[in-house]
Amino acid sequence: MDFLDAATNCVSISPDNRSESMKIGTKTERLEMKKLIAWFTMVIFLGIAVSAYAQSREGQNTASRDYSSGQHVYESTCQFCHGVAGDGKGPAASALSPRPKDFTDPQFWKELNSEKIAQTIRSGHGRGMPAFRFSPEDIRAVIDYISHFKKGGGK
Image (cartoon, rainbow, N blue to C red):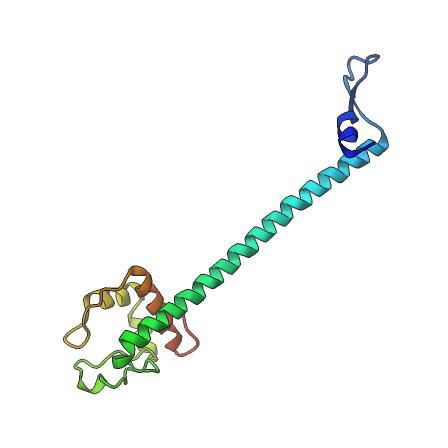
């Protein structure tokens, strides 16, 4: 008897007992159905686990791309003033007033949040920092990148 026959024959109508209209098949057939249910359950949980793993890896890849993108934006646009180390001591810093912000200074992170930093990037600050026309994704990425300058390990 194959699996389909077992599933088909598992339920039978008992003509001699009308109140008990359905009977479960033999012990072997019940065992086969339990195995079938167990396999389906296992396949469903495996599918959920694989999907969750793929989503977690995608999040890591996105974070990695954001960091890399933020690093590229910083190095090509911000580093000249804010410095390689984010300490506000880039090659152009001495000529600017006010001086560029020091991203390694804990006070910087106490006073500003991501939205205020994004607003400064979009609008500029004083005569020293011009406004930049970055995409929202690039702004988020560069903020994520500069947060690694924060003393104590980032965000």
